[in-house]
Image 1 (tube, rainbow, N blue to C red):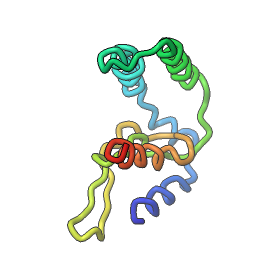
Image 2 (image 1 turned 45 degrees about the vertical axis):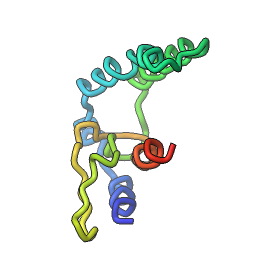
Image 3 (image 1 turned 90 degrees about the vertical axis):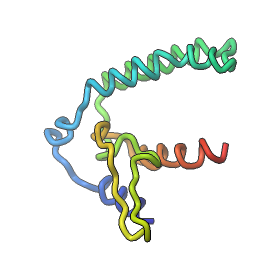
Length: 126
């Protein structure tokens, strides 16, 4: 509940364009492209899950990332990398903190909650 309240507050911030532009991390975007997007096919093959559709899917993902770099996101301020390892909770649960802000900046509504949900429920509960 505390995390949801915090994220709702952050997402409701009204920040100027210059403030949001100050959070653009081009180096982090390049790392994601190089280490994740460009290696998707290699990963699918390594885990023996590549299929006839895999190459087309990988091409679509590369295109989506390239397109995202060209378009201006009109959204909310986002943590940008919201997963269980980025959240600290005090022993009694009365305090919640977020670390790992290098991907923070303008994002789409619900991006943080979707990432957190995938990290929390996707890996552990299949």
